[in-house]
Length: 223
Image 1 (cartoon, rainbow, N blue to C red):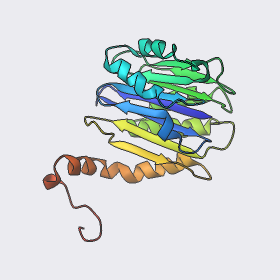
Image 2 (image 1 turned 90 degrees about the vertical axis):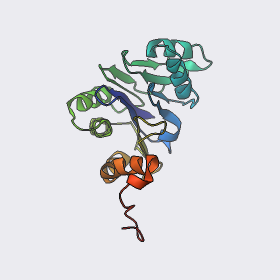
Image 3 (image 1 turned 90 degrees about the horizontal axis):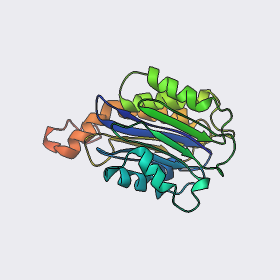
Image 4 (image 1 turned 120 degrees about the vertical axis):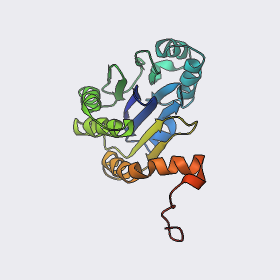
């Protein structure tokens, strides 16, 4: 019911994830990140607890491989599809024996992609190649991967929700964009949302950290 990517940017230290699904509000359940730790996903008959647990384990010093090995001790783990990435170790994917439909995953140096109920097993590989070829900030590269995944076939059924998440130097995400229900092509709609948000991202961080240094807020009454 989902295709997704997790990734890191060694140059900036950022971690991020992006996801799309036929289910509503997929990002609220499936993608997680944490400053200085990494990113994680839990999808396919999702247990939203597993992403934060993976991040807790990596924060305690476990590698992504070790973290997912611990999570594989959890009940019903055969129904889950998980990914985890930290700053230095290879990303890891786990797909349980009870995961649904056409399944595929791929692991690169700085990213991993996975999906279930896919139209074709080519989707994750197309996503990884697009990520590796893309330029720009991590969020842009994640979105290029999602666009490539949708173009390669995406999910078997129509996709209705999508999300994009990036953590940088703050405890909160600098990018947390979600489309919880779109009738047609939420991945393209999410990319359009990102392109609106991209030029304002640094201003929102500045407003949070030091409002005195922030530019005008760009709204009626403070232009």
